[in-house]
Amino acid sequence: MITGSFNWSPSAAHTNDETLLVIHSPQLVKHLTRVMDHLRDTAELGITPHIQRKLDRQRIRCGDELERR
Image (tube, rainbow, N blue to C red; front, side):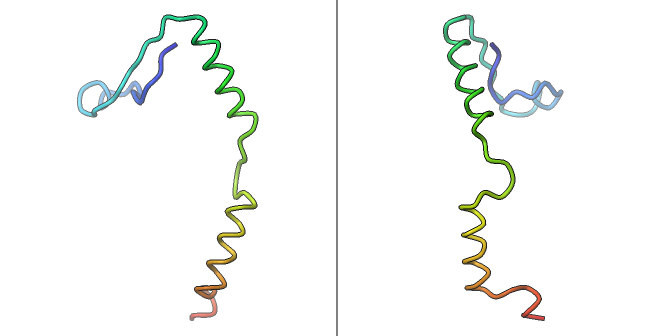
């Protein structure tokens, strides 16, 4: 498994401060794959109900953009 912040661009290779880690462990790769699959399967896309409530509270506190014009 190859992981890190390296993005396979010339800048990553020659300019940026990137990380690259090569893992040679089938057991660790299997575990990390399971974790990443779980994150993907349980991800909430878009605006979650929690974030929507925060946005609604902020809008009430600050007023709506159209009301200020």
